[in-house]
Image 1 (cartoon, rainbow, N blue to C red):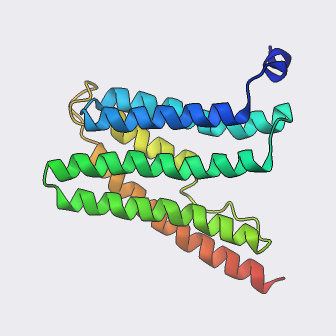
Image 2 (image 1 turned 45 degrees about the horizontal axis):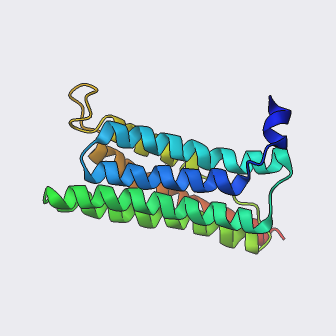
Length: 186
């Protein structure tokens, strides 16, 4: 089965673009207040994002442009889904939650930026608590257990946003401290 998949015409970029489409669908479902379905689409799209790199390495079909596209789409997807969540909170006049989403977007971008900048300086930087899979789990739980998502009487979307904002801020600080120590020892 694995060999058949590798020999197929499937490309890592096709997987990346499928993940992007699923995350666009998740954002549309959030705007439509279909949180459970949005959570499912977000999880599926995020799985595609995690598989494209692995498939690229396993199949030997990866390219430098594909790696660039993958990381670019990952940032875009996270921003689009969080923007839809911010729009939802804005429609409910929940300014604190909107501010939390803005902090989460900024934190998520900084987690990615600190890693990329560190790697440009020759420092591998995968430290910190808010890696991409952790952020996906937090946001997925918030969507799947959002008010009206039909999975009990939970409201985890707003707390998930605050947790996401907090852990991304902590991770950014962790990475700054780590890179500083690594550069001092070079």
